[in-house]
Image 1 (tube, rainbow, N blue to C red):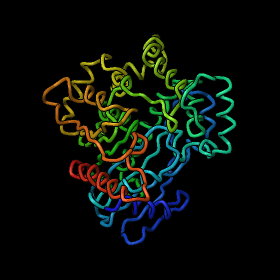
Image 2 (tube, rainbow, N blue to C red):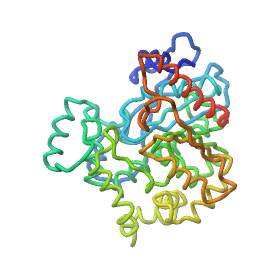
Image 3 (tube, rainbow, N blue to C red):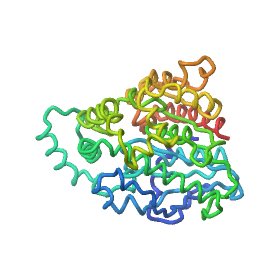
Image 4 (tube, rainbow, N blue to C red):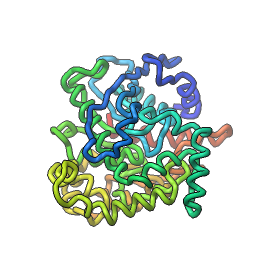
Length: 377
């Protein structure tokens, strides 16, 4: 596939407000499906967050393959602080075309179209960024693109958990609806695999480890640019969060989180008694509930594969290997480290070039996604 060409084509036709989208020259179609989140996190969410209506009622794109009788589906999960699906359209198209699967692009709570439009508006965010810089003058990597998330996580680092918890609950409800035959597009008997990138991989690992209601017992998870425990991530970036926000979140989960979940509350009960809660706790640091995490991951061998990149500074390759591979010889093939012959980053592994370099990007995209196709098919 010519990635660069297809990127521009899909960007030009995609509209999140259109129910059905035709892709020129292809029999694959995109449908934007409505969803209402009934996952309650009121017991441990910031009260202001419950007022964000976009996070409750939203739509998500489904790429429908040429063969409508397909019994395969792939859930595609994105990275942290994403505000648009544009980056992922070619990813979904390729997976739909090459695996014959329905591909579901499901937004993490308070991301993409589950957040106010103002959060991605440079005109609205520039004054907010300037105000933050005045108050916190020593902060690095502050930008209009990351200031909304940076402010939110600085104010309340528990939002990192509650956002993921709500998303996990929504995904569980989505899969339930498919299994009950209630989804308007996806057959009830389909296999469900996952393609996850960045923080979406962190969430996916926790979901597979917790395996609520045995909904994911047969699911395969292909990870790109992710897979490590939280402590090995370095989230400071102009496209993700600034240094103050990352330091606040990192210190909270490394030094305060376990102390806050003593006693009795709905949150504490969830984190201590549910397998998915324990999976989250075990994915914070390599030494935390290590045997719990590694025993489950060993049982998932064959269901998880990760490709990470040499120049990824947000989720470095060494941390992915330490989480998935290095503790057991039998796990060595679970993760691979690759490199690309052009300037890339974690946030933008497949940049758009108006030069011969675009052919290199096309080739590297094909290399990654053909590996995903082989694993997920």
